[in-house]
Every structure is written in structure tokens, then in C-alpha cells.
Amino acid sequence: MMNRYFCATALALPLLLAACDEAPVSSRSTAEDVTRLQSLGFSVAAQTPSGTPMALRYTGPINAAVQCQTPSGQVRTPQPRVRAANGTVEEYKLNSYVMFKPGSRGRDGLYVVSKATRPSARRAATQVETIAFAPGERGTFASGLSCRAT
Image (cartoon, rainbow, N blue to C red; front, side, top):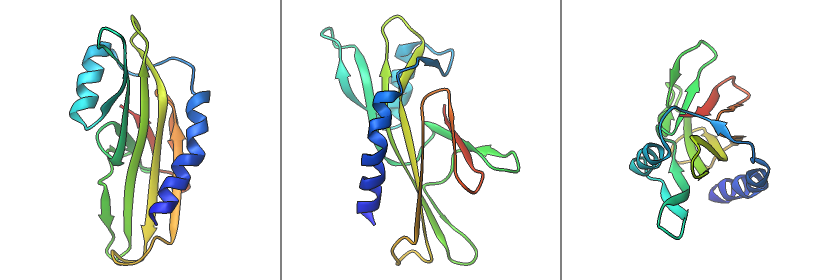
């Protein structure tokens, strides 16, 4: 199962190079964005010679760096692991690389959200879906769940 996550991530990484358009995501300053993302588990991947973070990365369970909207309109951050009444388990993972441009409030990068569905907690995933989107854009699963960076 882990190989599927790595394969999905490896296939999506070339998209990172294509995600070059600056997209303002919030009205926060770059320093505020960096601090907030670091509090969510992002680590510094690159910095300027003066030590200012230029790029952050994250790999792990989905967190508040992403919000999703259900087809019914409810907006929330999905729980990393959800068990349905019928025993089906869905696990959400986030892989992200975010770049900041000095003197700009925009950020570039790539968010990759993977959803693995399995018939029970002890079984291998029977279905893995992956969406990828840049800051300021949305990605949508086949179920209609639409996600964006916060």
C-alpha cells in the first residue's frame, strides 16, 4: 500500500515544476504563512543565505493546511482516518512543497492529497485516488470532494 502512495507522489512531482504561477492564497505576510505552516508540521526545505525560509515541505496525514468542500457544501479539513458505519476506512495523506518569493504575498508549489479506501482497517487499500493542485487552485476527487490550500 505504501508503494501506491510513493508512486502517486512520484507521478505528481513533475507537476511541481509546472506550478510556476504565483497565486495569492491569503492576506497574511510570508513570515506569518511560514510560521503557520511550520506549526502544522511543515519543515524548511530551502532558505536564503540570510536564513529566511524560501521553501517548506510536508509529508504526512492531512492537516489544516488543506480545506475540502463536500458536494453538499460543507467546508472542513478531512480527518486523516475515517471509518464509515459499514467498516470501510478512508485515509487521507498530504504531500506538499510550498515556495515563497521574497517581497511577495503569493506562494507557489504543489499540494497532493491521496485518499486510500480499504474495506477494513486491517486490509490493504482497494482504491487509491490522488488529486494535485497549486496554491489558489482546487483539486476534486471523483466523489465530488473538492480541496484547496488554506
